[in-house]
Image (cartoon, rainbow, N blue to C red; front, side, top):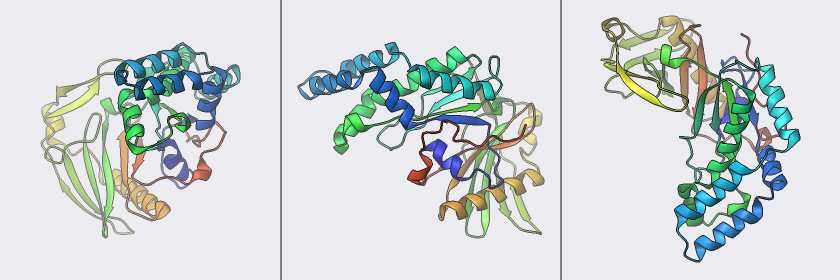
Length: 301
């Protein structure tokens, strides 16, 4: 899962947005306390008997959203949010699916700044485990619907909409970096492209892409594309020093996972800081999935 992969690199020198994880065990406590398992089982039986999948999925998700978080779990989440700064601190809450059968990567809640909003987003992330697509995928794969779990990642907002984002991936002796202004994974045809040979005497080859548009936030969950300025289109997104940092992180990630991985990064506009926000592919060791909510090691600043 996403949080576990980031946690594997905690302490290696890679920079992460400060945050915490609501683990699979916390999800199980929520399901048990809310007596949701019978609701799930009943819905799945109805689906297998011929009821419309979309209707069944909506009914299960409604039961999830109506259930209250157990007091102990809610208190831990609020306390962890308090450690990030508490009320007024902007965070992003994302699903962190354990298996590829649960494609809920679109379930992300941005710019949340109250504990109540964070708790509500966690409940919605839990409920997303029973989208029609996720239920159908598990049925097709022969997976047990009742053993599925949904951890959640909560992190400080990185204002990449005011900065930049992209990917870094090791290829042979070079690290290939893609970068563009704003949010998301930029298209190769439009992005700045860099080849970085890390080391004491780094070699950097840069290509300035067109960067005609960028993606920015348009609300609590939405984004939109806007035109870039002439200065943004003509300037390189990253400096040589920033490229060396990303290349170093990419090498560290490859070594830690013992295979090439793609590092998704974001640059916070207000602070100018770089952050690693996701690592893919490659599963994290099961030992990372602990009961402790504070899985991510806080970073300075």
